[in-house]
Image (tube, rainbow, N blue to C red; front, side, top):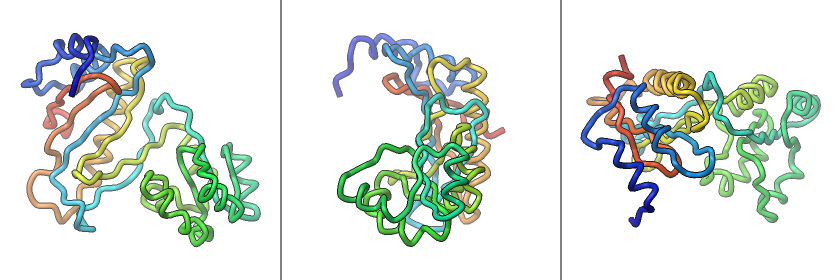
Length: 231
């Protein structure tokens, strides 16, 4: 993969043989974020799980104490009084059955998170092929299938993020922006790690957290010492 001059220069600051502690890793991920926009800082957590087994799936959600630095657009599927409640709670879009053709046929996807009341999941299920591959399908584990739409919206707007294994059994999650302070990023990172550690499948034998890397959108990976984070 061809890398630009800026990336190559930034990568010189990182020693790929070193496992950095949390504070150092955060500082380096920020220092090597040299693009001209406010890059997102992400955590990439390689696990020892085998996601092909249902009991080894890791999935959940956590509210980052300092948010993600991103404005999140929330779509709520509800009916009756819950529609009004969702609107009052600050949902960007609310609706029901009438949104299905808009999403299916017109390809409307101007939202980042989908929340649904349980009685709407029959309707939302018809969008599985569109929302599923994009990770937008509401899920009870992530708190996005709920009757308490006010709390769901408040948590998402406050910086709630979802974590789950990808096909390689790695979790990829944003923990903030380059413009955050080192302390804010370290807090967010530790909050995420505590949630992921808590979500360890009881059936897993062997090592759970294999490696952790922090990186900005366009920057090099910085390896974190898992022992210092797991505590």
